[in-house]
Amino acid sequence: SQKIEQNSEALNIQEGKTATLTCNYTNYSPAYLQWYRQDPGRGPVFLLLIRENEKEKRKERLKVTFDTTLKQSLFHITASQPADSATYLCALLNRDDKIIFGKGTRLHILP
Amino acid sequence: EAGVTQFPSHSVIEKGQTVTLRCDPISGHDNLYWYRRVMGKEIKFLLHFVKESKQDESGMPNNRFLAERTGGTYSTLKVQPAELEDSGVYFCASSQLGVSSYEQYFGPGTRLTVT
Image 1: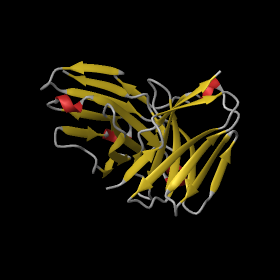
Image 2: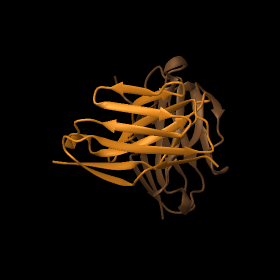
Image 3: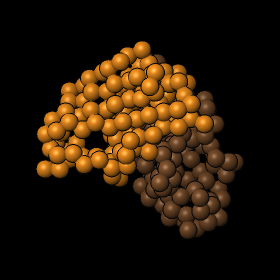
Image 4: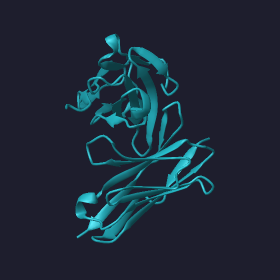
């Protein structure tokens, strides 16, 4: 069955450093990969989408890579800030729009 | 512009009772989705409306769950009768048709507790 693994349940990073989150998947060939941010008591917020034919995408301090051979995506936050602390969800989808989510990684940026 | 809203934010019911969750999507969004997150698990797709039609309901757990979207505006998700395993957070999301459909906007969720 389709499976998404996000590298760790929680990750602590010192403020100012780059946070790198990993998403691995199996038994799936997604057309798109997304990253969402979720804060406690709130719904996920869309951050970035990367297509299967794209290697990298950037948005401000965020960078996402997508390696369809390794079946892996890396999500980077550069110059991290305490306000970046949240749960980050990796999600896969195909052209039928059904999203498959990972469990998420809780990121803590330490001041 | 108002985001996706869900009501109630929290519901506590006893096993065997009925609960109806409501979702108001962003105005103009024809796509409406329901998802559920059970404690300790990932968010899982339940179903997808395009306007008032069910496009995909493959994620609905069983026939105790009934979703409707009359008039293609707001949607309701009814659980009848509720079981303990139905506890979790139910999210609604909406998106536009076409090229923007992959960017879904989520509501804050309804936390359902069945005791």
